Image 1 (cartoon, helix red, strand yellow):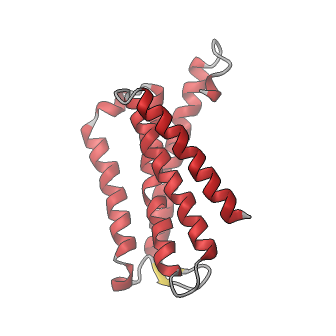
Image 2 (cartoon, rainbow, N blue to C red; image 1 turned 90 degrees about the horizontal axis):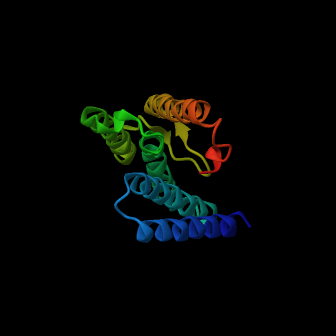
Length: 168
């Protein structure tokens, strides 16, 4: 049942993303939402695969799932900055820093079999966390908290005249 729900939700998100992308591909908010949606959809699909894959292929499938998790905070923060119209989206250094952290995180995950710092073991159904996993978690939560703080402040500032702002 969870497998089917993950697949259906992923397809629904991809449908909405395709509709938005082909409606207006020049809008930066739509591009940021599209990138975030692709990451979330792939994460949903990989979670579905992790539910049905056997222990032999679990490490590969779980790595695919976690790759999405590596890029999710950056994509969420970037979308929130675009959605709120923040001037920080013009800051190239911030963009490169966010992308650099996400790429470093993903490289640490992919090269884990060489150093075992992200996961000390890939136990089925969940691996044993290494020290880089906790660094990843702290940075991810900082990025997500920053994104939601930006959204919250934007809603406080602009939500009084527009009660439907949280739905947009």
